[in-house]
Amino acid sequence: MKKNTWIILAAAIIFILLFAWLLSRESGVEKVLNHYTKEKYGFNVTIMSTKHEHPTIFIVKRTDQPEVVFLMEMEEKTFSSKVLYDNYGEAGLLLEFNKWLEDSPEAATLKTLGFEHPHLTNYYRDGDTWNLHDLETALFLYRKMPLEESDAEALAGAASSLTTIKDELTKTGFELTIVEVNELSDYPALYEHQSDVISTKNTRTFNFRQLEGIDSAEDARKLLD
Image 1: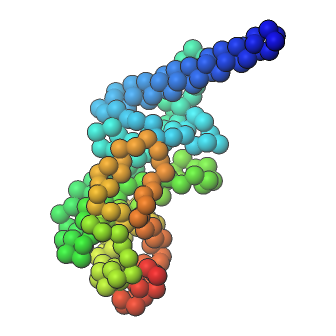
Image 2: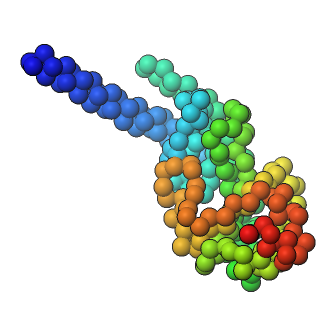
Image 3: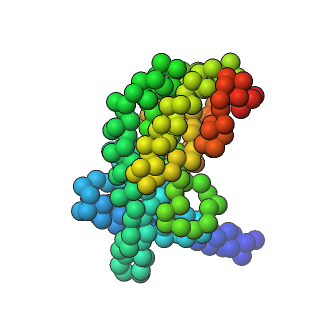
């Protein structure tokens, strides 16, 4: 009986020590990343997650502008760690594009159709083949109510503006691959969680190729069915 008690106690101590180590590691990693970004760019970041098959690759977001998502690669050593690379430059280009988009005729048209706060962000999906530049580019839109089949005319009406946004984005070297429509109540809280998995109950996600095929409300209705 006494032997079993010691085994349970030892296991509990090991678990507590492991948990404490993981917490201190995460805190230490974020400290290194923030020292780097603060010195190089003037802002702090929050870790969203790691590339699971590469535990020294971190998906981060700007603390002050959490829709800005990018990757950082770090070399970890026992007594010292350093950042090897980041691709914030790409995220920064999207930030500039969003400034144009905010006041564009396309954003105005989308708003009349019920699609608000259009902006682009880097979008990471688990399971991608490792590549430091594998963040997809997504356009996020928001509606007061979930997008349903009855909104087919609005989606069909938005198709031209979405194509223009895609064409303008292509000029910057990015390719629009995803359009995600969320409820307005999710803005901007969508970025306030830690996870890189962005999903809400009534989110509709489209591959842009699906939207390119919309020539009429009937086409949109089939897509929303």
